[in-house]
Length: 364
Image (cartoon, rainbow, N blue to C red; front, side):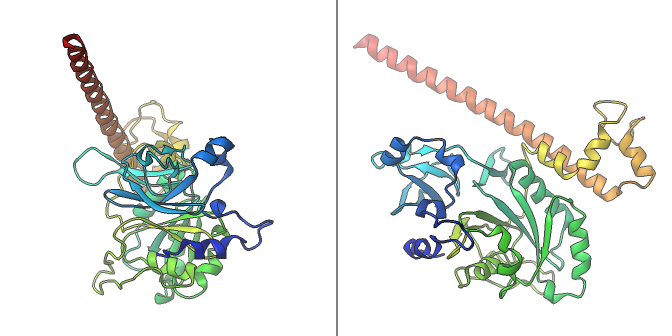
């Protein structure tokens, strides 16, 4: 990662094709959406900073002539904007997010995991080999749609196969709202083919499993070797974990790019509208079913099953849709239950503390 942020600022103040030089804070992704949340007076007293790294006990933040670590906060994730309180850093104000990527945390614990905030474009990176997985790409796209982030499917290692057109066709069939790009993640292709999304002040996220070329892609965009990379296993094309934590990397003269560790598990939650957008045709068909609570399995008068029988829709895609709907509903319900219990527990704790304080006051 580029540690000398002054180098980044000096090289990115004038974006290619921009009408005016970007300010330092704009180079970090500061937009009118965030500016309208605060007054000029507030900004002067509490300067905005962006979270570029999250550690176990600290947050690394940068801003206009600011590059420091502050205490960790569980409600803050990478990409967030804070108004930095120099005296009480842990109380720095969290600004409303433009977008938020989240999932149900891996494992059996019913927890919500924040992935990243304030992303403009998400590159869903997959390889043209055994790693290619339609169901996984659909999950990423649904996640982006839910967060109102522009999704772009990037198929790497297209130079290593003669079947790149087949991979391209499968990816393009996911949604007509998603651009698909095939490339060699090394060299100049990423800058050329992804340039329209990598404009100065924009924040991008690279999502995908280990070994698909996310770090190689970021190195190519930056034009320098900022991240260590590793090869994949020969037998199954599985990658090794190179990136161990989420980091925002600054691309000299351009955008900011979030590199993420490969996610083996992406459980969707609170993503009903994203799934609806991804499977818009199936959602439209479901509105024509005889019963409002139709599960599209055996029910009479099911418009979805009728379309399946007539060959209008693909059975495998229908199964993936059913699976995502069921998963999202279960995760959303269990996490809502967890939040309700946490809220009730917090209320109980506050009541106990209040009673203890009252007893102390009465005795005093």
